[in-house]
Length: 236
Image (cartoon, rainbow, N blue to C red; front, side):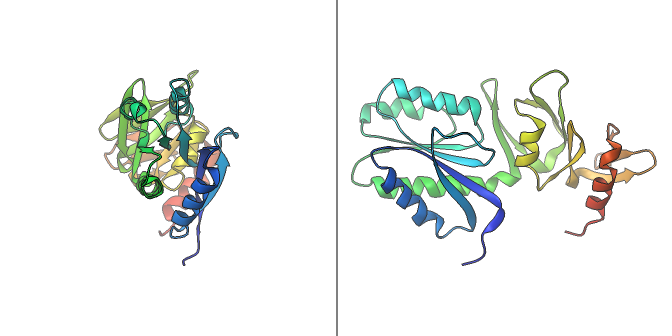
């Protein structure tokens, strides 16, 4: 098998006390055929910045709220729900776009869980091309190639995404977005990320970036000049 991709990590969050070992074995079986590093943690452990696949066991009305809590703190990852209660399935399926599947613990449980994990990994593979998130009850699916820059909004805990087709808000920090999009973006300052593929030219003396659509950006930290120049000179 090829070497694992070192700069990509999938983190599985398991909240499944009854079948923890069974679920862990299924994850390991799937990941043997994937070229990604991964780790398995319990759902209650501290949240990290990696892409996460949650596997939650939901058996009553009270713990259905776990889905909402995950959506509030980690909306970019995926959720797989397992349950023994058929009556919960219709409502769970309405809970939001993060749900990959709701799996009943019946005869085909292992097959369906394995399939759901593979779907989640496929979504992960597609993520570098799209920025998917939820903001104020609206779902966004923005092609990364269309993003010109992302800038922190002053005195607000959110960022502004400026694209070739418009502007959008996202409730994430610059640091989170830098980690998520690090292969495509370059820092112009501590509060701004620039899409390398959207840069037409960089004027060193004026410290000015011109984008492909001929618009410009000048709020660039002088400490970042070398990184920008090196990035544009680099042959991919």
